[in-house]
Length: 221
Image (cartoon, rainbow, N blue to C red; front, top):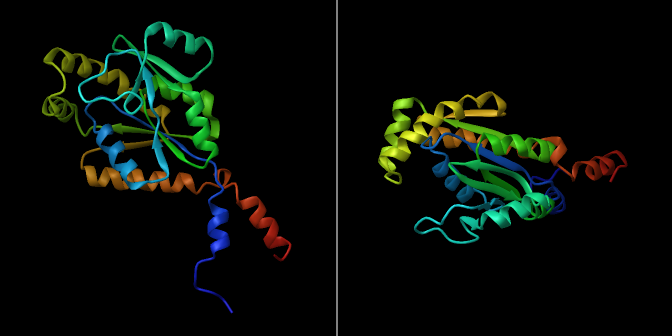
């Protein structure tokens, strides 16, 4: 008789999977930070990669939660020792992704979310291989992008002008990404983002349990 109930053994077996690295990139103001927070809230098995940076902490930022705040000398030493998966200079400061915590999370079957720019995404492509999926967030228009930067009131007028000037260069790298989302309406953009993550999790190469499972099927177990 066929059972319509859950197979607890199969559910346990499916937990044996390789974690996924999800990169979200965008120009400042495209809504990436909001989408990142919402995606993390939806997924208990996903963690945010915490970057190291040489810039000073902003109001409300916590060490080890928002960033690891380190000096330029230590940052340089970590580069020399191969401790970063990626690193880049952005607006006169350095940012990098420590290797060890990411690799530990992936091995444990956890997904890791990255909020990095195109330079970091290029380096991760070389370092991560099949673990990586890259998603670029675009604004619906340049005017809307500038409006969002002014609305969030985090930066001076000079900084906003600098970010707008850089946005064209950042957006020119869209074709290097696996998926593109235009964040015109946040709810729709989030639905698209969730669909991408769900589909990537289902890819055969990430399902470490399938080999033993199919072997059992063919052997009549």
